[in-house]
Image 1: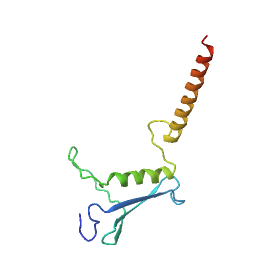
Image 2: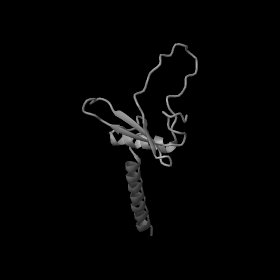
Image 3: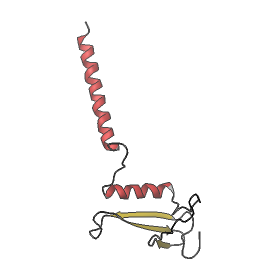
Image 4: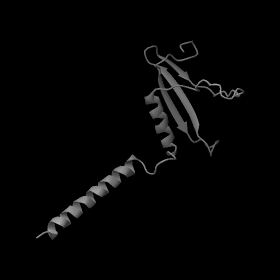
Length: 117
């Protein structure tokens, strides 16, 4: 993967996601690869589609990214207002619910102790 037009394996990938006025019902994605040691930068260009003519045949993946780059992509999409379809709430609302439950436990425990003779 280290031809002149390709970043080397392990290059730092960064994604940018934007909701552009020219595409109000979609998101534009940008990707950048940086090789900091070699001081080189690559930008991803438009994705090309290839028609799948052989059902059942395995196809190559569109791209392979490290977990840090995948997290960056998730964070960028989150900034654009996208949320996972499955599951309700976020880590923030879950934390708020957990604090509320702890408060309720404390109140219930306090009430039980007061009612005992």
